[in-house]
Image 1: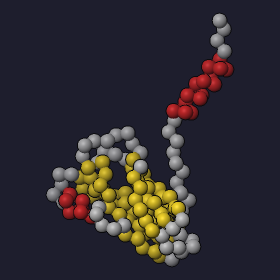
Image 2: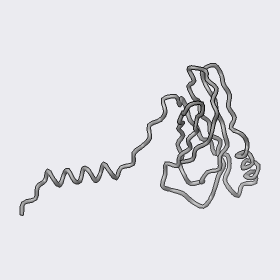
Image 3: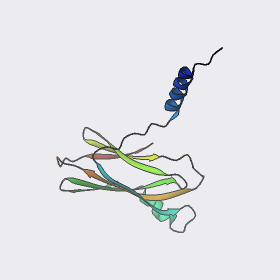
Image 4: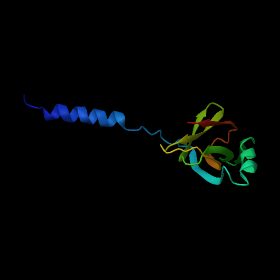
Length: 130
């Protein structure tokens, strides 16, 4: 029986495309995202920084730009990416684990979002962990 290479190539292509991770595009209004490590579990200052994760999200409107900062507890070995999703009068601050590597230790990080706001609209904010 003769092997049809076109069919084999087509099946291989379908398998590769369906197995690849689909990355969500970055929202066009997100100008900047940064995640800054503060400390890891076991550090003397960990409890102090962990308490900051209970604070309200800090939002500052400056002309047509929104500066947002927050403290989050994360997996110390994970890698994260930021994004936003805007729905009506609410902005969801997305903090997404993008690595397969995780461990049992936690850390506290300060996250910063700079968001374009050409209409100078006031929003409500909420964290979204994905």
